[in-house]
Every structure is written in structure tokens, then in C-alpha cells.
Length: 514
Image (cartoon, rainbow, N blue to C red; front, side, top):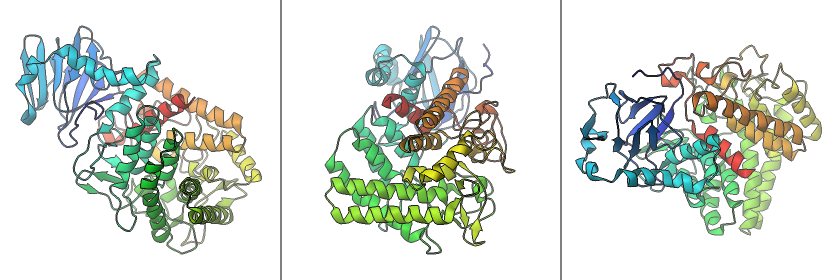
């Protein structure tokens, strides 16, 4: 029995949908062909099976005549045969008859030998089968993956929350949580609301919200302001005025903090904090290693201002629901001002796109990126501007690649297959496509959505997983793309992440919204 040479991988973990999870010591594995790799709490070893594991469910599997299921956050029960390929001593494994119980050593409980396996196995399948009755394998897996991202309260995160991928990023991220909530709204609206609420738990008195939080800490930078966008999406499922009244003032404080602390030159446009690390110069933007940040530490950033202006427009709508007439006017004024300033300072008419402005060199950077299309989401561009942007999206040398929208223009000297330096990201694509349709560009918007979903489905068929990003030329499979400097099949941070959160959840949201 040999391990198959696959480069996919589906995360395998216990979900808060079924009970209490364990952020620190919970068992997390990865299904990869005929292997179940052990990743957390210690990365070490694997189990081999005679046949491929059916990884549709993220917490139970079949492999020929052998079956396995997570009984709780720590214990894996297996009925049938397999080979131990050398698991770490941090785990305890014991077999009695046909039953094997495996758990982190300090949590091992032999009482699970007496459990009814059929009951445990059926319990793990119940959530997915109840929330999606269709048989589309890609959508079923996307929803199942979302289930494994659901975490129970722990420490400072005192309500249910979500994480991008359980391994290696097991913390809670700001904009990831919003994108997860967008899919959750179709399945469990209460959990979707908790996913938004949880992000606000890390908010400081001055309004700051960290870009990630853990049960016992948080980061010192923020992330794109998209919480209002997420709140509005949840309210599409029915106005919950109590929920809105709870989160509205918190998002107001956050947006006020952004305006007060990220406008370094006082000119009215916002700048990300750029820390200059070689492979993550601007983690605050979410576009960690984008070429946009290579040569500058202070930029009036297109994406920051587009997100902020959209939030202001949405907050005006939310304020109207709360009958806060003064706020409605204030938010609309803020949105109009930022849109106007973007058009004056960031629009490059010759290039036909919005471009970051270097406030130290007093000029636009000239780097054409997918961020340049984001003012579409705030309604900034005029019809004439949109026509020029559409031209770029149709130009195969710019952004009209086989798989649009590359994160950097295809003909740019700094284009590569490394993360935000060229590859395609699902969140940007779907936001831009939706915004294009709001401008009447229905054909192009639908085309981008169709190609985006087709790429996800194509590589899911090959690797049975959802990737962090994709090749704009649609030539290289995601497993061959670089991440923060180079590609390595042996180093998780130097390969596009598998079973990545928002790829699956935004795909699910798109499909469930059809």
C-alpha cells in the first residue's frame, strides 16, 4: 500500500456545527488521495488506506470497506484496515478488534471503543445532508468545507466564529469572516450573524479592529473595511433590526477609526500601513505581497478608498433602516467625497484605470492592478471611465487573460505567478463582476463569473480541493504557482493553500444565490 502522489488535500476537522471545537489542541487532518495526514495539534505522520478516501464530508470518510469519523474535537474512530505511516508520538492510537481510536495523547479516552460507530458516522453527515440536498459534488464539498471552518467560543472569542482553513491559518480574520458569513447566510443565518459579531469582539475602545484575532490575542494592524457589506448581505435574508442596531454603531466606530488613523497626509484619501517585510509588505491590505507596495511606504490606496466609500454608502442605507436621518446624510457625504477624490487623484485617464498615488513622490505609481477596478463597487467611475476599464478587461495583454482578472496587468514587468503579483483571486473577481453588472455591463460581468467558477470546478475535478488563487493564463495548475517567493510542494507557506476558505464559500454563495 503506497501513498498516491497527489497535491490536493481536503481539511478534516470537527465543527462547531456539531459540538465544541478546540482551537489549541483539536485534531486537524488532511485527506490526500489514499492518505489521512496529521496536521494539528502536531504535524506528523499519516494513515494509508487501500483506496482513496471519499472526502466529500469534512469530518468522516469511507475508503473502500474502511470508514472513519471524528467523534469529537479530539477523537478519530476508524472501523476497518489501514497502515500507520508513522504518526507522531504526540498522538495515541489503540486498536481493539476492528475499531481503532486515535487522539492527541493527553485527550485519549478509551470509552470511545464502546461508542456506536454508526451513530457517530451518521451524526457527522447530518449537517451537510440537511443543509444541501442536491448532488452537485463541487457545491457539496464547498458547503462541507465551510462546516469545518466553524469554531466554538474560546477565550476572548466568546461566540461562534470562523477561520479561513483550520490549518495552517486557524485564527479569525476580518474580511475572511465576512466572506464566510455570505455563504453561511444561505445555510445558518444565526451562525452567519455570529461570524460578523465575532469580528467586533476584537474591537478596541477607539474603534480599531485587528486584521486577525485568536482566543488569547490579536494583531496590531487592520484589514479591508467590508463589515457593512457583510451586514447588508445578511439583511437580504430578512431585516433583523435588533442585529443591525447591535452592529451598526460598532462599524461606525471602525470606519471613524480608519478615517482618523489612515489618512497620513490629511488629503482625504486613506493609506494602508505598509511594514516593508519582503514577502508581506502590506498584510493590512490583504494583498500581502502585491507589486503595488514594492517601492513605497505611503500610498493613497485605490482598494482601501473603494472599500471605505462602499461602506459609507451601505452605512447610509443601514442608517435609514434605523431611522437615523442625520447619519444617512453624513455617510452619503463621506462616500461622495471619497469617490470624488479617487476620480481626481487616482484615476489615470491615459491608462484607463485607477492607480495608487505615492504621497511622498507626489505622483501615481503607474502599477496597474486588479485593485484599480474596485472603485466600481463604490460607484465612483463615470460611464466614460467604465468604458475604458471594460476595454482593459477585454485586452488579453492587460486584464483580459484566459482567466480574468489577474492581480497585476499581464504585460507588467513585475507580473509573476506569485500570489498577488499576477494570479487570480476569487473575492476580487466576484466583487468586480457584480459591480460591472450594476453598471449595465451584464455580459462582461457574467463572463467573469462564469470563467471564475469554471476554473474552480476544473481544478477541483483534478485535485478535489479549492485553492487560494489561480493562474491567470489558466496554464499552470494552482499547485505549481509560487507563494511568497517560490513554489515548494513541501512547505505549506510556499504553495497556494488548499481547501481555502473564501474560494469555497464565495463559490457556494454564488451558486446558492442563483
